[in-house]
Length: 96
Ligand SMILES: O=C(O)CC1=CCC(=O)O1
Image (cartoon, rainbow, N blue to C red):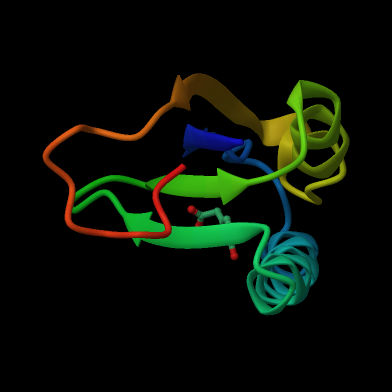
């Protein structure tokens, strides 16, 4: 199942820089591993904002919840999710 996931990051302004850097490094490693596994299919920065738009390809709602709630930045993000289905005009065979 495909989901559009929008994540807006709100790190506390008083978080020490080295703590923020360590969380971001763990976030990057986790995100890249999920991309290698094919579960995090797209990751886009929203221009001008500390936010991203992502496409996840997971088995079901429960797997999405499991993966997203394990994000190191999860405690600091506002997240919105929308389920996706194939558009009849899409030319991409891997949309499903
Ligand atoms: O910077 C972000 O948008 C948050 C994030 C998600 C995956 C990652 O590496 O950073």
